[in-house]
Image 1 (cartoon, helix red, strand yellow):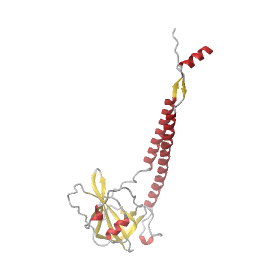
Image 2 (image 1 turned 135 degrees about the vertical axis):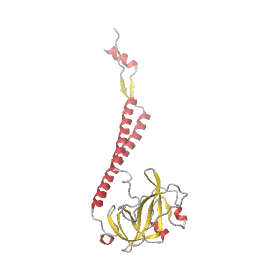
Image 3 (image 1 turned 90 degrees about the horizontal axis):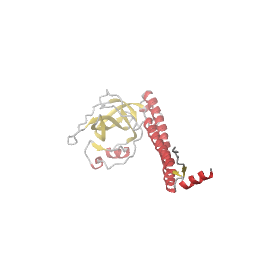
Image 4 (image 1 turned 30 degrees about the vertical axis):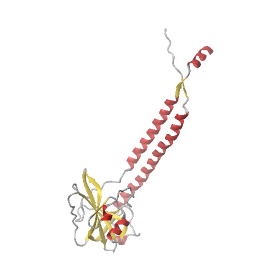
Length: 252
């Protein structure tokens, strides 16, 4: 009758395996914690966004501070500058290429603002894009936006062009103010009333990344950390030498 012999294994990871695991595991855990922190920040932003979008709209003269809070609803009354228009490039809707139209607007309070009027298609760049501006005094329902991010860019053609409208890939209010020769405010707004005569397509995308996506990324990082630990344990288990097993049998 044959006897089944179970080979014993002992946990003895080598130096290289220790160094690899100890150098990578804290990075994966740290990335997971960072994504959880980002998720908490986005949840706070989403709550603020919902609360302020439900609050009554205010005129600039009713604001307690020089600039409105992010996502504050506003009633703006004034007129558009018919010439100073920028086209924010690389914006898509339903897979179609287009631009968002940014235009200088002077409120009755005297402030010059940068207003995002919405998206319009521009599939063929060989065609000259036509942006119609409503004439006369306008009353706009808008919301204040957070400060634009300062991401990488290759350069805008607007800086070297004297023609309007000007194509840009990133919003820098100080640069746009200099280009326009107008004292644009240090904050910007976007239209939220589709029926307004100045409104283009206003199905604004949500925040660049929702809190749930950050949470999902955090779970992925922690899963990778767990998989690394399991791999470390598995790779560190080594079979005991046969000589040790024979000694054990002899001792018994």
